[in-house]
Image 1: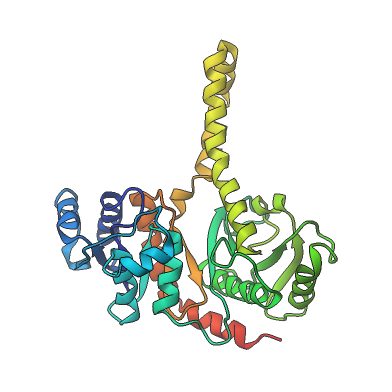
Image 2: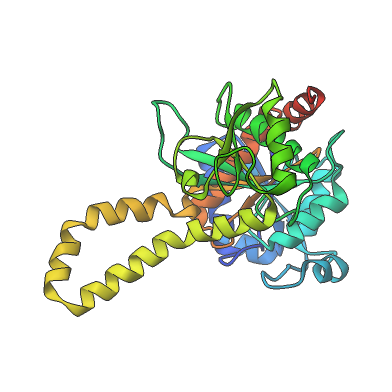
Length: 338
């Protein structure tokens, strides 16, 4: 089984929720975890919860990267942070993949410094999984969106590689033999989006290794038309944040309505089950993490607000990605590029 290095000090609820998530994994699976962070604080949490000591090791790191710190500053001044030490543990062969709910920018830069880009890959992509409706039995209820922030603006070559990497990841993790790939654009017509997106559309349409369904629009993000959706990091990050805000707005509106009129409280009570389902569907903390793709080593990035359940799921995803040899699948996909 793979060994997963977990940044115990990264995230809004670190180290308590991170350590609790790893403790859950130690009891439920045969995955070995390396908890990286302040040893005393980690051990204090472990003493409060049940766990399997044979599955957990601790690697001390004196520092941690704050969630709001500039990523370049963190790289310069926090060389002994839990994030940096975890990434170096994987680069040095002590572990096989990294999981972190910490500072996203610092995570991408750390991976860029200590991991190597796969042959042919020019830029890494930060992916995310998001819930969507399904169109047929067996379709994964989660779609993959990339890039969501690693590369703000992209050239045509980079978007084509993102499509290949996302498709390879979906084949391995979602077990889809032929994932459907869409290009996020202003409209479905081939001529939409300017020269770069028109060129990407033309090139993806000619790739035999990709089931390209053409351009998709924003409303397709929550539908089952595409399993992998490709876009620039700036656009992807905006789309991701919008999706994340849906449940929060829904709850806020419901609470405000309930405070104003009795009849609305009665109506909301009748709709409560539906509201709970929408809220659960859009609760990103339930879905673990998503990968930074393009490197020879695996990095699974969790939401900053992740709690124990999300961390546990992210560790399981990381182990699955290692076992299923995701980087090798990406190399094969890029090797077939026309």
